[in-house]
Length: 221
Image 1: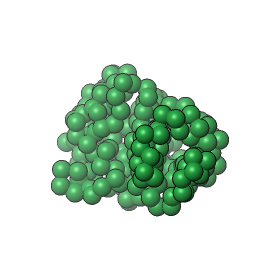
Image 2: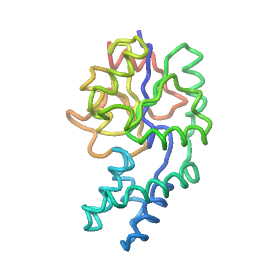
Image 3: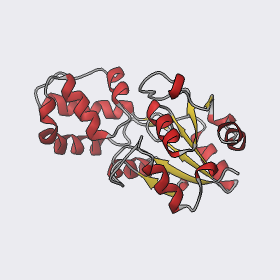
Image 4: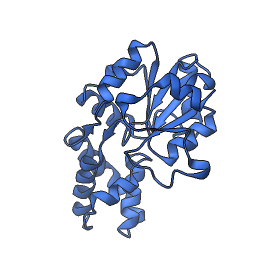
């Protein structure tokens, strides 16, 4: 029986790319680098804010500037969090519906905890989750299975009782490594081709039509 659903954040529950791009370009220009298009930033999202900064600086030809640039980018992003992020249609009602069914909900993100908690608070979603596991909550992050194992142990659940809902290759690989089902949204930041070994168990066309018991049967049973 399905008891726990683990949700990715960026791309899956919210479109956060616009405000991340704003913060990133503010940092890049302060360092003397050219700004980048939001479309490129969307391709970089998924491994946490510091990793995203590293990708941007590598793109700018300055991969060694990450340590120096990080404090400024962290401040830039903290100011931008919640300014242009949008909760995807159907998310709020879905989370309430799942909680009413008695399912335990986990936020499983590679975004650093300070940013994740601030974003959830500003979007009034914090209370919808039983547990938040962020990119710096543990020594490992997605796609390492340890993040899922940590969450399931905290909720006294087994892998066959869990489902991971995300938007990317990273989410599929995390689920596979941890032995849980993987369903992906059609929107989001896929980070690659969702095919072959990186194909999920199923896709969610719209959160209004997401039936977790059915997803659990397809993904796990």
